Image 1 (cartoon, one colour):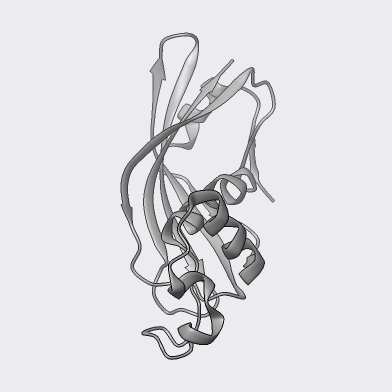
Image 2: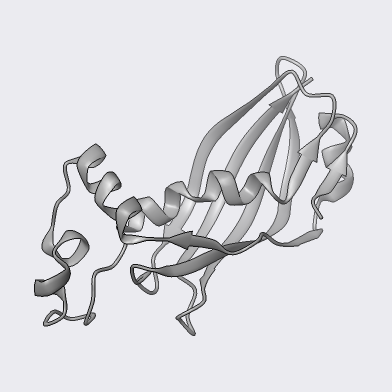
Amino acid sequence: MPTTVSTPKDLLDLVGQDLGFSEWLPVPQTDIDKFADATHDHQWIHTDVERAKGGPFGETIAHGYLTLSLLIPLWSELLVIDNLAMAVNYGLNKVRFPAPVPAGSKVRLGARVAAVEEVKGNGYQVTVSGTVECNRSDKPVVIAEMVYRYYA
């Protein structure tokens, strides 16, 4: 169940709160191939299943930026703001990719609200400490500090 607040101002009450984990999201080879097409990054470790069997990971892996882009749908499972005029993905402060995401595996996001501050335009900037886990890895696959802006 997501954490739900009534207004963006209510985000101030969430500072330091752990929001738990999203559901597991599959990362199939078809998504990796589509991402390769969209970004023009067809490196064989991502798209050549046969060649990747002899590569460093023994199989194809998702692009780091594909995994990073999944933060948006995963994050939307963790927080709901009922009376919201607009939400903006403001950026990232820190990002690391400690482990690969093998094709066909699943990922989920664990998140904690690190900071909330008021910004111009009746908005609130939220800094979130996030960790993406993979069901086939002992290490996190993404560690990121995400920044969002929510406006009433």
